[in-house]
Image (cartoon, rainbow, N blue to C red):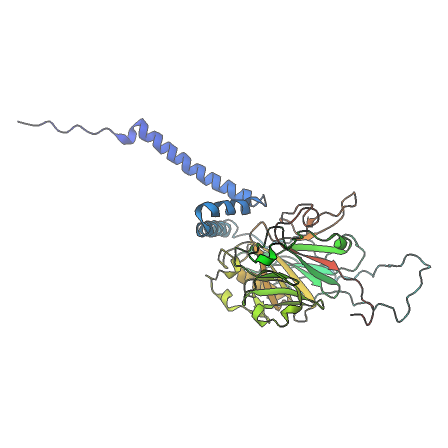
Length: 421
């Protein structure tokens, strides 16, 4: 007797229930992609969003997971740029004078024609004008107009004074024409570098330092001679790089930490802590990862594509915004660099090209690196403005709005009469 064949199972593929599930999954997938792209754009438009989001995620999924997300996101962004922008041309961001620059005459600082001439014994010798030598592009075939040529940065409060800061742009990466390093050269004969700890960072675990009154603002007595300001170093959690102010140590120094410091005689130093002498003579000091350049030589670890030290939580080969400080061999020029789309290796090479002998990397990521000037608004109040386009700055930064993270600032030195230096 023939048995009836089993009935054909229902076509689940065509059932309304399965179709609904597929639509939901497709919608969730597309929504996740759109949300991720939107969030990526947002964290590069709103300066506080990226740090806040990263910190919130660390408390939920842990630091290692956040590091993986950051590296993956930056890696995808770099791959997209290398596909989408492969035919880009290097860009200039300001007009470079075609003729050799002339130094404006020193301003007349006397109060009127009847002002008495200073005596020979009290006369202050006039310094030669600051004039850093242009170095040209790092790669001639990969350069925009003006690469490696220094352009004076006028003091917005004293526009007639000879500039004591000059800026230039370098395109340093043979694989990424959109990578760029903005550098400011500062005349240390006429300018002083100061350091301010943030209201929150770097956090201290030193019991004696917890009661230290954090300043987090540029002192009002320096507002009249203020030239510029720029970001500091990593958060404490990213390496525990040391910090000291006077006799107070907020974070203990690490032997291999690259240390930027100012001695009591005013001289600046950049070196590994273990190789610094007379550290008790430092007015302040701030550490970062091992020196990128030391005596003009690139750190050996920067040849390793997996080196992590120069990206804090993320790899040194990660293509991100970075910042650094350098000194020339004579220690009379300070170089301040902020970059777009650079690895640690590329940043070191760019600074070596413009003349830096010793270099310490400062903070990284989109939100933190910046170089700020302080012009006056129509009411006469000084306001913060980024020297370079694309860097987010609030008008009250460092002056009226307390800085949560540490930073540096530059002031004009008072002229020193002969015999008093």
